[in-house]
Image (cartoon, rainbow, N blue to C red; front, side):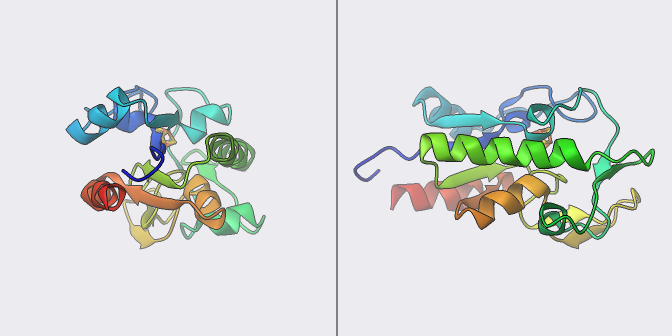
Length: 163
Ligand code: SF4
């Protein structure tokens, strides 16, 4: 594991916390439970940390690019048309604060979320259309030099940490 034990920022919903917009969470993967037992995980839910309630309406970015939200060029809105840009940006800032506090270089975040997605997101039309893009927090973390993986890339992250 190298000289120091790398800590990993992880999406709360991937650890089973019921923080998703629909009030759900996911059964944690075995590797995550092991890292948790080793005290390596720092848990984040950018949407809840940013002040949004659970459950909450689904939200999306028109065009799906979190970096454009951070740059003030695009909003995040709910399927009911409410602007939730401010809590999304606050949540991304809180994720950054955690990373700085703990010296974190790696994150494992939920795929395709408008906050946490690292490779793909939805296009903001709420019709299930996926685009190549990032969520708001994932974009902020990448810009800060954090390597962001999603749960489908867990084996890649595990291999990297063992090398
Ligand atoms: Fe929270 Fe990210 Fe999971 Fe959404 S995907 S519930 S923002 S941790």
